[in-house]
Image (cartoon, rainbow, N blue to C red; front, side, top):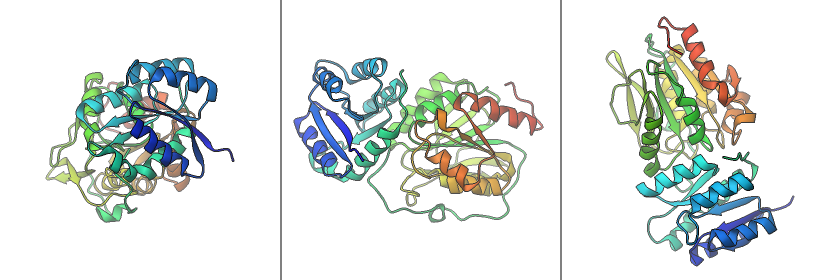
Length: 359
């Protein structure tokens, strides 16, 4: 099988060297070229036709985002963008994902040369994923032992049923744009939405703020113990699992820094299990584009608890990993394109709820 051809674009000679070594030492990929700036990269991309490009953000001669926008317009290619885990960096990273980057690789804040080796497995995994991703013109701590949702909370056989509907969403690679497309049409009187998106902790607050500026509902990063309200979407912070809880007559958000599940914290499986435990048939599950299998077991538990579940279809996914696994495990009722997802979910809720929605 041909090796994945990668071009590394970064103004740091040291980072270029480290990334090249990480790539070349993997048996299934090769760094065919490196470039210190986008102008040199442009010629290399034209001549070598890489399968994946890693792209720094702040570079001389041309801003990484400007280059990305031009690349996606003229020659769409899977891009992994490079960003430091800073508030400013997170804004740039989110903009890069909007422009068509498949995913981001997080640079350590300090001692980059010595610490980036800790990200070797993640870098290689994301390159492999990017090589298979569907690119259209327009994330994670170091690898941890794999756990199931049992490491965070037990499964219960009889959920505490209320009448209030909830939408429970999980996503990973490609999810930032998929979530935007899903949330923007949601009306202000819609049921509350809880979201687990695989994303580093320095990104989630900026991501929530960006969505809040675009949506008619309120979108925020979840905080522990806060009441879950209609017309609100709660995004799991990148440092914690998000779980649905109950306090008296109210649903609440609960956060946990227990072990990563499926190598993720936040984990979709954990959120979905909590919805199965607490909301049962009053939950509606949605699993969107993403790499891996996180969420498949939890969606099955939601199904078994009476929830109605939707999965994004392969054609509209950037990576058809998580939805595919959930479908294969038997937890999905409907497979829907991203374009139709919001309408289908709201229509199902309207037809199975005592309260009418303004769809």
